[in-house]
Length: 378
Image 1 (cartoon, rainbow, N blue to C red):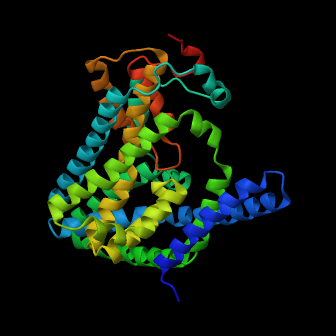
Image 2 (cartoon, helix red, strand yellow):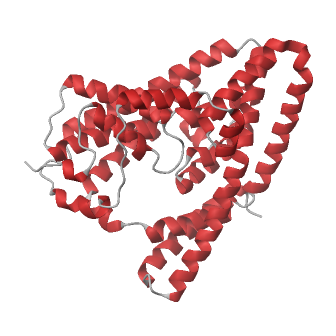
Image 3 (cartoon, rainbow, N blue to C red):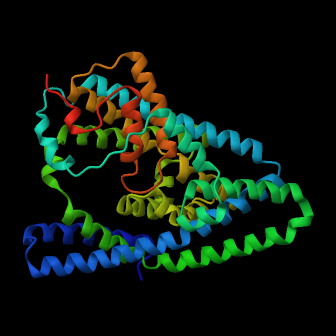
């Protein structure tokens, strides 16, 4: 019987082929309607199962991870290394985006009427930087039960960090509670194993839906910008980050990609780092042989605030819109874009298109238009 990785690879190939065939059949065909409905049903079920275990998993892994790190006197080193890497990798991604957009300057001379169809139903909310910072700080500390119920990953992470530190400071007095969290974490990992048995089918269904419902006309219209974003993402993800990995660990990128294959494919299919978190944690611990204590602390935190792709996209989109509007951003304004893109990316949840919400802050920080009606032609 094929391994899970082989089954997922087969699901990817079949999903892409089936989705491509559906686009040729036509939207009105009964076959197209039935297959798309069935794949949507299966895809939603798989993603919902991942989301079902997400919050309990994040909560228990952070609590146990922090407690065990404190017990082994590693917390300071791990904290400093983790945060330094998160900030550095996002900074590199933003600089890469700004350099590419200044050199290639996509959007200059483009006819702006093409955006009306895509944006006419878009609802925006004015969010000045000061208000964004207030909301960002407010979102850090919430009622833990409310955060757990709403699935607010960032607030859950912060509460779990505080609880983990409190358990360690309490010492032996809270040893039974820590053991209970450890057993709960083991229970969640068992449930994740069950969900992963459905991964080949779920990814197969997700890719059918993705390929069959893409708006190729819009992608063609924005081909240059889309191509630049894809190229920058590949350069950052396939060259820069593997180079950093090799520089500090001497591990081959191929070794990493083989171990993280399930998580990478699931992330591609779901477009969500949060939904992929259970799979990522499983890959890091089982395939990459990272210590459970370190993985339980770094992985959920990274899935929450380490948004290199979002930071890269928001910085590039800001300069793209500036070109469309005929606005030349100064070096000082681009430094503002750098800072706000990093903060906005940290505040964006790990769900599909979350960067569209926080990107408004980046645009408004340098006076760029948010609505189509605010654009003007040269």
